[in-house]
Image (cartoon, rainbow, N blue to C red):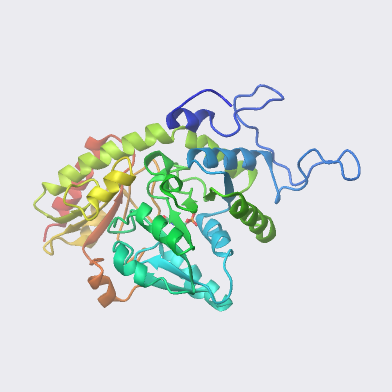
Amino acid sequence: MANYKNIETAFIHGGIYGDKNTGAVNVPIYQTSTYEQDGLGQDRGWEYSRTGNPTRAALEALIAELEHGKAGFAFGSGMAAITAVLSLFHAGDKIIISSNVYGGTFRVLDKVFNSFEISYSIEDTTNLQTLETKITPDVKAILIESPANPLLTITDIKGVADLAKKHNILSIVDNTFMTPYLQRPLELGVDIVVHSATKYLGGHSDVVSGLVVVNDEKLAERIAFIQNSTGGVLGPFDSFLLIRGIKTLGVRMDRHVSNAEKAVEFLQNHKAVKKVYYPGLKDAQGYEINKKQAKNGGAMISFELYENYDIKKFFSSLKLIALAESLGGVESLVCHPASMTHASIPYETRQKIGITDGLIRLSIGIENIDDLIDDLKQAIEESER
Ligand SMILES: *Cc1c(COP(=O)(O)O)cnc(C)c1O
């Protein structure tokens, strides 16, 4: 392994670097499904690409190193990664999820794993005391996100990991919003980290992918078995794209975050803005906890406009920031949680949990921040009734 101490260098040199055979500085795209064997029972370490592929293996070694885990696994989407993790459980098991977990995670539990008699309960994971009272004997895992969508709610990751250890169950963190550059849950005692690498890790909105990292050999063996058995693996070309994306993760995140901090400042000082949700704000829910467990507040922002601003007009007036689902790409994206990502939640429930019709979620890209602020400014002006 190369000699370095810092994660910024690991983004570029981590895992398996380059190609021993040719000296190529990049891991080649091994676009192959199978490998010729030298004789019966004499393969060269590779048999079939569902089981293992050198390009995917380089990515898996890289994410394991970045999250400070023992083993990494790459899947065809974040949902495939989460599905593989949920496949660890048995009929009769229950999984606690935070109240604002990613919609797809809720859906796969509610509509797919439900048929296999794996149940879930939705709890407020920000309160560790009440959370502990929910750990009944059938509960086998707690799955959280911090920050969680769309109000960027913070959960004490180490607190949840400690609770899980005490009750001998698994803790799972979806680290999509922070990436290992800003937050490393395994270091806080968590058992399993999952990622939608579609977002910041890929970073260019050009690949759908998911990753799992674990810190325990036994758990690694079980995930490897599930990955090979169920087969939702990431292809060689997409693995290459992800390795390529991760090389610039450090510089991209620095710019994402500094842009986000400036956008937050602009929004907070605008008369049209009722509330800004950003974990880097001193008066934000969980500010102190986030400061302990993450490098900074990240680059996702939610905000609410006053009722005398027409939300439809605001979205249609944006000229640079695109209205789209997803996040974490170099381009800024905006979405309307009430009608897009959280539309499946009934109206009354949405009001109760703070997902009002005036709520706007921004994924701040790495464009020049002045252009982004100009776009927000003119769209807010256009939307005034
Ligand atoms: C997007 C997302 C997922 C799902 O990932 P896909 O790559 O879209 O399957 C899971 N968790 C979070 C937090 C996400 O943002």
